[in-house]
Length: 193
Image (tube, rainbow, N blue to C red; front, side, top):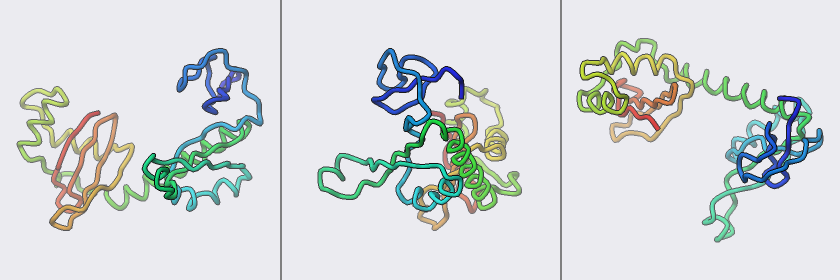
């Protein structure tokens, strides 16, 4: 991170400007090595599975349970944690998160990335919608575009099971999401946020 970093005591965020990007508080103080900075928010089970990685590198992590108002109202366990680490170990902790994400993506690639993307099909109704959403010409090859998104996916995640028993899987690249039937490689949806 940059040398001139600031710290918001309200949000526990490190920032390069003297204004917090979250709460908009002004005149932040310079960050100190011992300041506990928010690293990420994650599901409780994920943290329980991955906390050994932080311990192996002697990165101290403080967790704060967070969740929905519904869970709080009924005194149910909160399902997420916010993770905080000292600023002096923040870059190391970010590297741990990036490594976890790379490993996750590779596992999903090997499980769901079709070796032969030529089998990928796009029903005409979905192709027509995709051309409109993506502002493509009326003769644009949506199947080729979807093959490119699938091949260069920066994130992959699974969805619900279809009535046929097949899994759905989503490939995301450059802000475009392509949902497929994992068995037939039929495109179910193409979306942009």
